[in-house]
Image 1 (cartoon, rainbow, N blue to C red):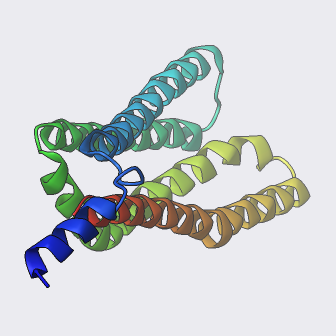
Image 2 (image 1 turned 30 degrees about the vertical axis):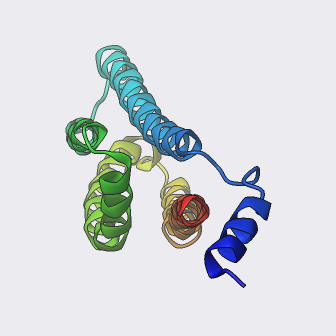
Amino acid sequence: MNNFEDLKAIWQSEKGENLPDFQQLHKAILKNKKKNTLKIYGVLFLLIFITLIMLWVVFNYNYKLWTTQIGEILIFFTIGYAFYLKYKTLTKKRIEETLDSESYLKKLKKDRLKKDKKTQNEKLIGFLIWCLAYSFFLYELFYKNTRTLLIGYALFICFILLVWFLYRPYMTKRYQRKTQHFINKIENLKKQIR
């Protein structure tokens, strides 16, 4: 009995039809890169649109109280802060485009772990400034009547709590699930290729 002939027969009997090619792996990674970049451009476009709307409100709304002016300034600051964060993310994405598929996957795994705390802090700062800005901005609408003031701010606080304790964690978990699913998909493809 010849071991080499046995191995050769086993090797040739195995069908290689189910193995994915490297192109499939590469396409999946490029698709993920492109999708993330398009999301960032979408948010930047939305921020520009919101800025134009706020400029229209500033020039066409005749405010009477100084709180509205402070609210408008803080809203513009929040928009600028969000624009800065997305632009910073976009420059990081441009650097990631130069990485090969293996390096990109390693960076994705590493960033997923360390990005969570940093992103949470950045979102917290932006969200708190936006809440403060909008509370100043709303004051002029509600200040004439104590009942409307209390009801308006109670609804605003309920909205803030809903966003912070329900919507934000849901979106964070959704992002983490999608990222983990993508990493698992790529890892499975890599195992099949090897």
